[in-house]
Amino acid sequence: MLKKIIRSIIVNLLEWEARLVLKKYKPCIVAVAGNVGKTSAKDAIAVVLSEIARVRKSEKSYNSELGIPLTILGRASGWNNPWRWLGNIFEGVSLLVFPHHYPDWLVLEVGADRPGDIRRVARWLNPHVVVVTRIGEKPVHVEFFANRESLIREKAYVVEALGAGGRVILNADDQDVVGMTAYTSLKPLTYGMSKEAMVRSSNNKLTYDELEESDEKTVPGRRVIGVTCKVDYKGKSFPVRLAGVFGSANILPALAAFAVGASQGMNGVAIIEALTHFLPPPGRLRLLEGIKGSTIVDDTYNASPAAMRLALESLEEVEYSGKKIAVLADMLELGELTVGAHEEMGALAARICNIIITVGERAKFIAAGAKATGMSEDSMWHFDDARSAGRMLDSMLTTGDIVLIKGSQFMRMERCVEEVMLHPEQKSKLLVRQDKEWLSR
Image (tube, rainbow, N blue to C red; front, side):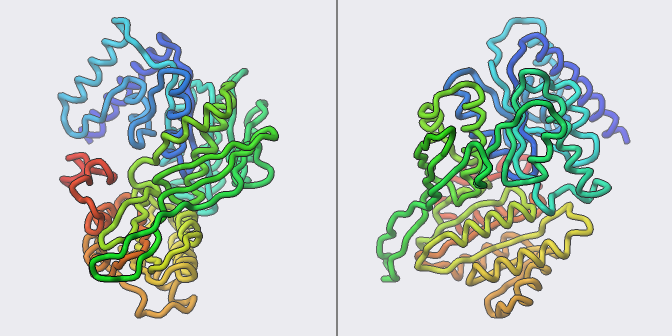
């Protein structure tokens, strides 16, 4: 009880300071909402806007009632250290009392774990641009809402918060997102893969390089190294090359960023040039070199059915000489959708992959879905924890194999990646959740 009271006091103090800071410095604000791809979209938008202004973005996934004020104040979480929290509060006072070189733009994630989360923030944030990514048929956090429609309505509050002169940018591939136009009189700018999108990608292709023959004299293979596409906007096409990213799912953040840049009058060529510097954050469909000439698709930050489907469908696009392996862990916060969502992912993975490894109690339904589709039990393994799954991977990987690793945050699937990545000495830079506070959990 005492801990909750102290947390409430800190949240209220930081929010009060953040609101005053916004009034003093008057930065332009991009608010990024949705259920799939918020963090990658936020990072891509920040890369583009950095071409024309000083930009600060949410660090990691600071998208809550606490994370948003911290970003506005330019501070990091104090975790369980009271002195760090006091330092955050004093920094807020400093911003208010003394002049600072404050950013021109803030690019903020806005998330909703429970009813009221976005509505409370939207009342005072007053964004200038709102971007809504995908929601998905079976979104995470839905177990905390009365139904799926209630969750969608919560996301829409950030659209409703836009004032005259604001810009709303919506994912055209998700009809629930497109339907948020009902909450604003502003004309939306849409992006996506569908023909209806105003900012649309075409000619999406994976790019590869050739692997050299290994010491074990195994057959050389190909390794995916990125994606290329064209961004079509107002009758013009702009070629884009994104290195280190995987599949069509990572084109969507680039499209969202292009839309934001275009909404601010940026030249299309300048936007594309900026996007060449975009790399998705750790744990979001990030390509890593694996042991024995394998490739890892690290998608370990979190998992929802929509995001897992995108990752698996991206894996299906790959033309490889080796095995396609999926290591899939529990998807949390799905409530009554849990069993069906996991079985559905299992059926999809069975169609795409040679081998499926599952991790966690709920992931047993992934295995059940794969088996029901006809996948042999000899091609499936199950483990209770991420490291055990990683050790199994270590024993089976060969040159040219590609492995997708994905699961909800609680499952800590980055530990599986660590077991099979080629450069574990770089894990602090390449993997998600490498803060000492996370590592001690």
